[in-house]
Image 1: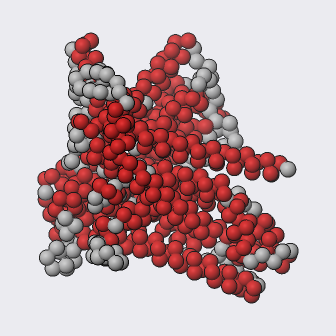
Image 2 (image 1 turned 180 degrees about the vertical axis):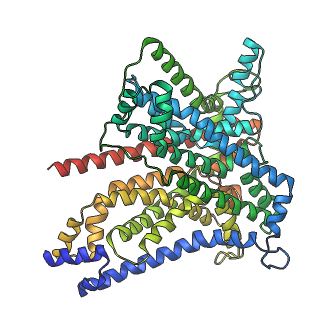
Image 3 (image 1 turned 135 degrees about the vertical axis):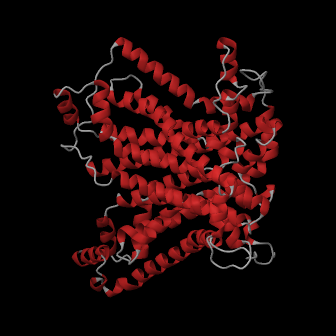
Length: 584
């Protein structure tokens, strides 16, 4: 046992010279696996993105390196307007999302508040609906002739432009992405050392002054993390502006240039470079903002902020605020449900009547979309957990040179907008033919599945990494001491113990890939190859198809909801089993 233990310890530390000879073939196999995965990620992520970068800096006529494309971009009024609109919408979405998330986070963590767990849970629901799915429903509720404005007109004779132009994009995106701020901010508020709050109170700081000078600054790490995610997600989003017919933003402009003019148009690539750069700059800016500042608590396990009970008037105001916010953030789901059952919904607070015909029409017209989605998302999720498990093992259990770079490379897909990856795939695979058919590989349905796999790999990787971290290295050492090879140990010991995490990663990847639009909309060559998200987009293009599109949207929401709940159940079950085994 001691010989095996020392060899495993040497392997984990990267001391390859102390590894016994009988282990060398297995270590070589892991090296080969690492190289193959690196080549796969380079070919399917870095090369397409590099193609986008190269074309952006090329002269379309001569192919020579040039900055003229970027000069032309900033000289064109439409592109300048799109750039500032994207920046404005992203910044305002952070502001509105903060206005939604901050009261929910503060009330549920600062006060003894009945139903706080339910409120937090309801606050996370918007994440299970892709923003483009609820965009049309939001128009019917908050639009110029929507439910809210019709009631305001009848009661007070006023109308509020909630959904006019960029306002609509801001509202939809804020409602969808505010849970990122809610989750991170709530966690930070719970981790504040209450002794700091008590010290401030002893010095005379109370109420809003206490919150502004002590509480919120200490919770800043969580807030910045959530706000950065909201900014990046909104800046890169394609589906919501398209469905709201707001085309003067960067992502829609990139899509329209490539889809209407063609893959030779340099402006689509210039916009793609700007999208990638801004994603990276946003993360970098959030890092710079936090650098050099100390947010550490005085004691470990300080117990979070001291909770206090609300006075009757305070409780009324708090419940009123929470109910109003929840009504707003759940309105897309309610509107989508009403639209899916509605007959005609126009110039009226509610649909004129209700029917199941929309679901019948949806099923008759979208069976291909649903079957394609099951196929594409299934392939993507399966490959994700296989690759994610391999990367997790290489990073955590070996000393292979460059293993951290492999982890970063797999996670880098988070910084690449879907529309950029789609454009990169079009450019990279357009001139490569599918074997035996002669069709461009960019038109092959397999490319859609591969794009979904790359887009969702970071989710599966994090789940697989967390699962492997809970598997004791001693179990592998014991198996090897009994004569098992490294490969057999992985197959018979490690992977079975990781089953829960692998399954959670599969479910998460499948559910989120099923509603991906930004990448797939660029790669769909015919409706026969289109997935569910693209089907929703097609249905929503005409007023007559919106009912069926809403019904298909409900299907999408159910798929994501089931996936989210299932993954959480799996993760919690694994935690309980781990705690139970540790106790025994």
